[in-house]
Length: 315
View 1 (tube, rainbow, N blue to C red):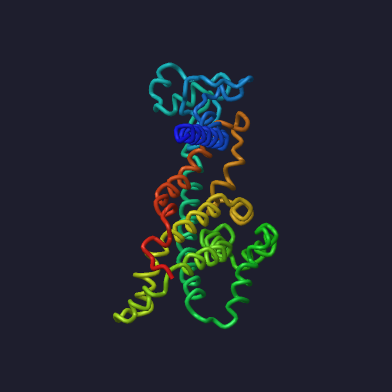
View 2: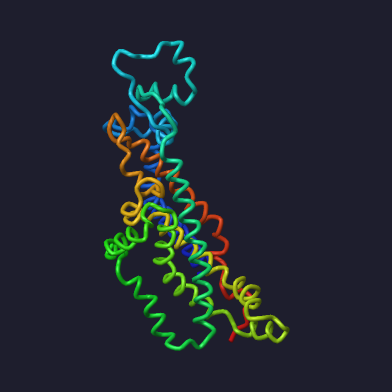
């Protein structure tokens, strides 16, 4: 009977593993299709039926980083001129018969996304941690009402207040500025950060803090040396979600920025080239755009899976 039970257990485990692999593959299909399209040559992108096997090309990545123009009819470059072209110019010419004019707008938009999202996430996590600690450890008058008010800012989708925000930003001169989008993302993320982090801080035993203050630590030293290390898991999870929200945000980035502070989500959908919409360049830009969120999540993965009560005193 024990042998039969172990065999059933192994079969069940393998069935579970296979099911998880299938589900994971289904979720990864859009991402795999983006990568597949990004490395297709120009002539293979619009082929029907789509080709699964092809000779990879980095032409789409070159096009997303450059601004180009089609050679006028009758002005085909000679063999000597083609030989003098830079390697990436040759790739673009052979695929789309285009001439590279200058560096495109994608690097600037990408840098805008990194600056705005990184700064807003950092400030949001700092403010959220401090506020959550205050609500968790002190008897604030009207604490429940304040927490409900903070939560109420998440009850409506942000797009509902897009017109008032636009009018306010235009009056204050914050449209198409980095500081404007940073403040906006902080305002929408800080309520989420406070509620999530308060739950984590509530689980940290107060005995650690009381013992530290008996030894002469100040309240700020207790917060910095005791609470923050214990709440690392919650801080990491909150930072990941806040970063992803800011990184993917489209509506406000589209409405409140046009050139100087425009981010990738607001810029990428409008990549109409001289030969029509460049699906390969859009896929390449999307693939590059997804990398920071993936890297940020991978870096914090250890904190995301670590228990918040590791080594804590059981109450």
